[in-house]
Amino acid sequence: MHNSKLATGLIAAVTISLSGFAQAQTQTPAPAPAPTPPLFATTKVEGTDNVYVFRYGNHQSMFVVTPAGVIASDPISYGRPQAAVTYVAEIKKITDKPIKYLVYSHHHYDHIAGGKPFKDAGAVVVAHRKAKERLAVLKNPDVVLPDQVVDGKRTIKLGGTTVDLVFTGRNHSDSSLVMFLPKEKIIFAVDFNSLGAVPSRLAINDSYPVEWEASLKKTLALDWERQIPGHPGPGGRLGTKKDMEQQLAFMTDLSTEVKKASDAGKCFDPATKEVRLPQHATLQGYEQNIEWSTHRWCGYWGRGI
Image (cartoon, rainbow, N blue to C red; front, side):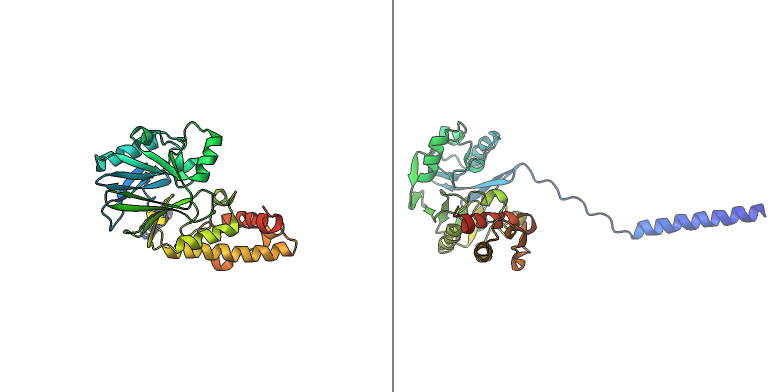
């Protein structure tokens, strides 16, 4: 009897063990975590001879190499001075030509702090007039004041390359310049066009709602096909006119719905809880940012802010 119980127990233990082994063999292994991208990277834009993207962390800039020198943008060194030093070093790996210009996309520090290495290299700093006015008052020691300013438009021609600096109106800021390469049909446009996403709280905090829509329309009217954004797009991809049209549609629909809520006396609350745009719910960051966007448009339609 004792031996029979022992045998039965052994058989049961083996059966359980084999069952567990079989389950382990059939379970789908957990996906490996995505590799951490390097701190910085320099990439030539596909289909071009001289247009590059420099990325450092979650910020990025465009620079153009010509036989007569380099046209660079945004030092992206806020709180990390090594970024601008790295940026200049990356340019020097590609060309021994001097850095002739450094163009500020707009006046916000996270994109334009850290210009001293470029200035030391001989670059002329260019920005919108409003950017210089603001920066002159702020006197931040990490931000180099522009040497030259743009009002509506300026064209830089260097070494056979043409870059148009275009002010398309107030949007995320009142000093945003679009860098447009007409031959390559590429623009560098920062922070006022999110690729497949709802703008973040920081992007809309002090923005100009209805003027932002007009600015997107003016930018779309330029003859471009690809956009280099100031922050990496999904998968590092460049933007398209479809992305910008999608952002414009979101803002136009939002404005319409918030105005209705404002006319009904619902701004700021309960409009921020009630206004929803299900047709745009697939945009990245929709759930996190729809209330911030509604709040800002309520400020416009409900308070005149």
